[in-house]
Image (tube, rainbow, N blue to C red; front, side):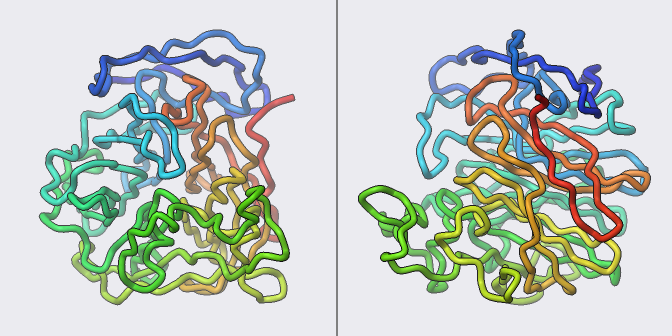
Length: 383
């Protein structure tokens, strides 16, 4: 393992350094873990600095386990030389590497590889955003990957260490599909998995209960004006694609029930519609319980925001409330929210180190929640 001595800028006077292009790897080869992105000065002022600069990281799932240490389970970005597209083909990640620290702003340890696609019997490629859970001293890593048919499912892997290595189950979780799993432990000891993501995440392909490979379902833009790509009231609209929830079985590696849709509604109780790109679910579900309220936060995708909705039980419905994080530098916006010593933190990513959509870096910043339960919106830049 290695340790990064980069201190997080946790206040608005955070450092403003960042980058140009990262070094190009040889064709068709992923850069080694030791590859250090080149960092150059820029006039852009960021709210906070990358947690680590030795590797590219994204999609951070933050947890504080019983040892009191912060663990971040991110994606590990590599440059596979694939052009950007709406299906996310450029995000060709192969493995997971856990980050940990004693406290925000402390030294960050980059651990050894926790799980590689070559060690997952059913998986072929695209180890996208993971999450983790702990139960009875065992740690569970949940991850999406594509099988030999190019279809996303969600796998589980187990370890007696929070940093791995993890041993993958031989098959994906039965009944799972799409991507971006997150696992929430409720106060009664029940664990729930939320998952799903549209466009390259394939959620829109499962609306009938079976996978539909039609090229017409690459995105959810078929309800916009096809000549302009803009929303148009003259075109049909419908409720947005819904993320899914399933209670986990006691073994933590299977579902105890068939996945159900998670309904996100507006202030009138009506479903958020597909054309409502500023509020509709795209990917990156995350759930917290703060007080007696369940917070369901997620990314709006092509409008690049992290937003949140609230409900009174894990299954929803969740009523849309507002924006958590405004658009970052880079196309994707993916986050987690966790509590450390009474303070909530937002983990997220941008492309400060590379300036390229598929080579991202994880960041961490305090998150303010008012006495009324409102999340105070963050701007990832400093004027």
